[in-house]
Image (cartoon, rainbow, N blue to C red; front, side, top):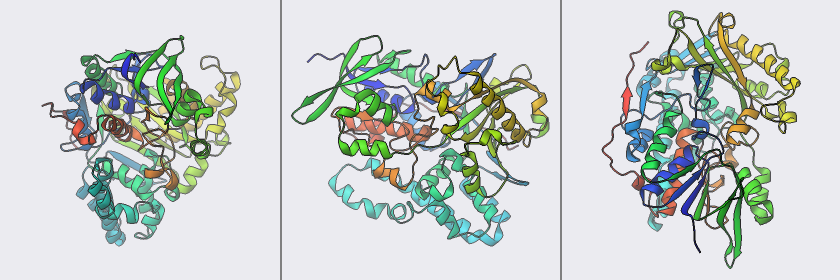
Length: 532
C-alpha cells in the first residue's frame, strides 16, 4: 500500500522533535504536524507589546560539561544552533519560606556543604539523602538502555537503590533522615518542578529532578523558542516536512489478524496522510479518546484512561517592569516563595476552589528572564514570568468557550487572581505593582488552547506511585504502529519529554537511545556567569 511518509509525528513538542530527528537522520521520511502556528509545544515563545515570554522553559539542567542534556544536543547535531547562559552559580534557586531564606548553589559538594552549615544537627541525614539521590540518578538510565536478555535479568541488581528506595515517598525519605521541618521544606521546594506534594512524590521522581539541577541551572539564549528552532533547522536539513497550523482530526486505524493498526491521519481540511508508523506527542487522552476513538480501545486501556490523574494546572503572570532590579539585589536565579514550611498545606491551598477569594496567593515561582538572558534586556525594562499552581476546576465552567471570546466573569476572575499574585510577588520585588509596563495573566484554558493539554496539566500525568515507570502510559501503544511520547509517558519536563522521544526513535530503529547520539563534532556554547 502506498504511503506518504515512513513516519508521521503529531505534535512538535520536545518529545516529538526528539523522536523525529533521529529517524530523519537515519534516512526515514518524516512529516511533523503541529496545530499551533509555531513549533515547540511548551518550548515555544511569544511576543506581546514588544516583550518576549516563554511559557514552559524557565530553566534547564545538565547543560554543563558532561551533562545529560548537553550530550543529547551535541549528539543529535543541534548544539551549533544553541547557546545557554549559566544562572547565578551561588544561588540558581533562591528560596524564601516565611522570613527564612536559603540559596542553592551549583555543584553537589557545594550544595551538601551549604545545607550542613545551615543545619548541622541534620548533617548525617543530609549526606545520606544526597548519597541516595546520586545512586538513583546513576541507575535511572539503566532500564532504557537495556536490550539483551542477560541485561534484563541483571537489572534488579544494577538498580538496587532505585528498587529499594525509589518508590518510597519523598516525605518518608526525609522524615527517616532529618528532623528540622525548615530543612525538609528547603529540600522539597523543587516539588514545584513536578507538581506533587512530598507525601505523594515517589523519591525516584524527586531525585531525578534534584539530580537534573544539581550542577546548576541554565537558560537558552533567545528564550524557550531557541530549542525548537535548532531542532527544526536540523530536521529541514534532512527533508522533514513540517505542517504548521494544521490539526489532526483522527488517527485512522484498520482491523487485521493481529488487531488494529494505525495507518493514516485525517487532517482538519479533509486530507488523509498515510504512514508506516505514527508517533503522537499529544496527551494519552487526546491520542486515544479524541484521535483513535474509545470504540477501538481495549477495556484495559479504557480503564487506565479513566483512572489516570493529571498534575496540577497553573496560572502564569507575564510582566514587564521599569524597576532597576539589579539595584534591588535581584539576579538570574529563580525565586521561590511560600508563607509556611508546611508544603503539604501549600499544595492543598493551591488547589482550593475558592483561591480567587484569597487576598494573597499561597506561593509563587518567579524568574527574571531578562537577567537569565542578558541579551533580552532592552530599553531599561525587565521581563518576569511568575507561576502559581491552581486547580483546573476553578476554570472548568468556561472550558468550552472561545479562546478569544471568554465571558466577563472569566475576565473578572483573571483580574482577581492577578491582584492576589502581585501581592505575593511584592514580597520578592517590593513596589512592582506601581511599576508595571506590561502585565497579563494566562490560565489553564490558555494551556489547553495552545498545546491541547488535558485539564491544563503542567506536567502531564501525575508521576505518583501507580503512574510512574512501568505503570505509566507506554511508548508502544496497543494499536500496532502507533507510539506515544511526551510528558505523560516516561518522564516529564524538557529532559523527560526529550528522552521519551528518543526512546520511541530507538524502538523504531532497533537500537539503544545512546546509539542515536552520533559524534557530530559539535560543542554546545555555554556562557559562564560570576557568582552574584
